[in-house]
Length: 252
Length: 280
Figure 1 (tube, rainbow over the protein chains, first blue to last red):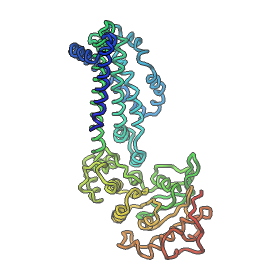
Figure 2 (figure 1 turned 180 degrees about the vertical axis):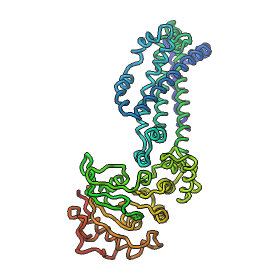
Figure 3 (figure 1 turned 45 degrees about the vertical axis):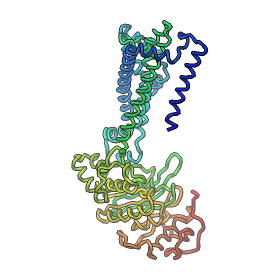
Figure 4 (figure 1 turned 60 degrees about the vertical axis):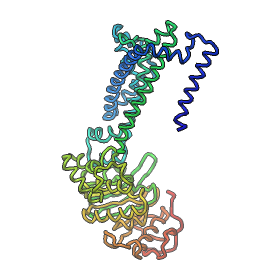
């Protein structure tokens, strides 16, 4: 019970200290709004922020789905033919180390200036790609060697081996990769929105830029809080889905 | 006619010699125990017989075809995402049998190993002994001519291991495949086999072999008979010999100091030759 309460109490303490410091030191609201002011802005701009959050979230999820499709297809290819893995290795490495911010303007040009939403989806997919791909590749190789020998012994085809041994063996690693990638896709979507804009949906990044540029700092913080809450909720939802699937997989 | 044989077989790994040269022939229906210290290449020999590995030199002959060989590994090696019945049906389905027919055969095989009630259970819900029984059912479901058991009871407690040993022997008596049983436990080897082949430490060569008298389905109290104790002594003596003096034709010599039995080895000549050899 104490362990459950500890993080809540600690966060409450931080907020109280922040609030107290703002009031005692008379910090101007445009510089650092007090939590109460942020809460006020959150209530006031709530519907607008919720709409923006949905825009960003749906773009991030679309990017995640796109990344999962491509990454899993490539990982299966790599599992069936090692040469595919070798051929793709440098590209995967480049995709992993490239900062999304650096390629965002380029992707925006490619997507067409009138389609910033496409650019954001593509950039979310780029950043979400690597954890799914590397998780799947590692998982597809992680089959029990003795179980693999059993498949040898009974003359399994490459397809039987992939479908009945390697894919089920890889499931935990694939789920873990998807969970990590989901958080990254959200980060990627927001980062891309900063550079590319977010089109007609006007995502959270756009709300932040707008608020901070107008020195509506409290509203900017409110948008930030919505983004953080969304990230935590997404992670928790995927964690719960992963736990349920793994429980089924393990038979418990 | 032999079901499978190794002729002057040697296996080299990048780290060095792993096994051999070894000669070993298996007659149909006979149960051979392969005994030796850790790292002597017992499991390698088993994989050669299974056709899962190729020798560096020498010849492996296998009369049993691809679907006619089964292996039981040290761990149950069941797929956690499949039910017990699906695991047992797997070899049949891989060979192209219809799913319904394979499942029916799997249920029969599970009943034979005493797991009638656990067909839909997942491996995680089975105890260690039950999982090993399921693994055994999977090996027997194809009615193999050659059954290879790689230290199958190593992870089990003594009571489970003894119960399972009797069940394996009873099942083998019915199906009569040729069996190779790898173990490093001398008593278990003598209990399970009609013939015990002893490998030397290091890259193993055959140190000698000892025939075990008695019916394959062991009568109660078999472990306490004088014949059993004497055979255990003889095998222990072969194991205890220094590796450099080992040759396939030399008779067993010396006594194993740790055997704990009072009777002297029936085949033993000469005095104790000292410690169990561990140096390659």
